[in-house]
Length: 379
Image (cartoon, rainbow, N blue to C red):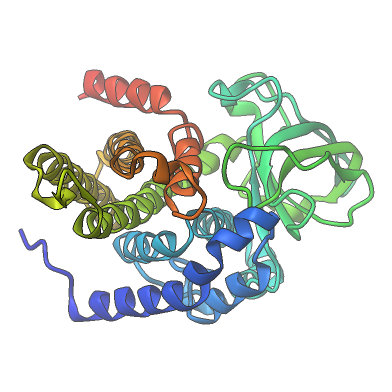
């Protein structure tokens, strides 16, 4: 059992860190304040291979592993949590097309997705179906060589800006077996978007309703066979959960670094904060929890890379533990700053706001517990 990174992984880590420090970190506060979606900077990340990290090389992917992806997303998120999280969603949607799409569909979209010339969104959640994703109601009725879509998707990152929407729709019976996956292009008649949601965090990426009103999509845009959509969506989420957990690692790591620097310079009662044992213990616990969270994320990534039969459970446990632990780390770092932590002069309030949603999306942490317990009783 070797916990050290390979030489290639260290090179990938250094590249992602240098990019994030140069392009994301100096702009993060401004993007948040101005609610600016950093498309150009994300395309620069794609030039380094981060637009299709675990996509096959045939259509421009980097063909890296899930552990490599976890390393990359941690570094990107240390620069900006929200931008890194969106790149992770784009990777998930791109991988679904590349993994399950026909050769024609892959050739049509994947080369431009890996460069992020086209930007992708993942559309599963609906106004009436969140955790109960299998009850989704958006329909796709077959009409000749097209599907006619009606319904809506909620909380969609990139809605209105993204070029490609990987959508889970109902083509058959009630429940998961009646779900299929279809790619819908921006500009398709009948596709529209709601107003940008006013959110607590992730301010630099748009989030809105995606609406389908008699939206006609070619049958050739279906990913996989009819009825396979729910399985495809869930396989995408195994990796998506690890990606968002890795983003939590990056945000909380910056929070710890910020708190440590503050404790070294801030004085109270005649001495630096770093000399108070109670605060030393707090920082030590934060660092310990970060290390534990990283180990769980990397184990889940290793399970994906080796096709471990426990992969779904390991990914769920890693996502639950890491996103909870990292949010608490960021909140503790803010507390260590006192009133200064509440100010936008420091990155901590932004990290807290951005990390909070990681405990909700890609399956709530309550659903992660459901998955973990379910898999326990299957063993």
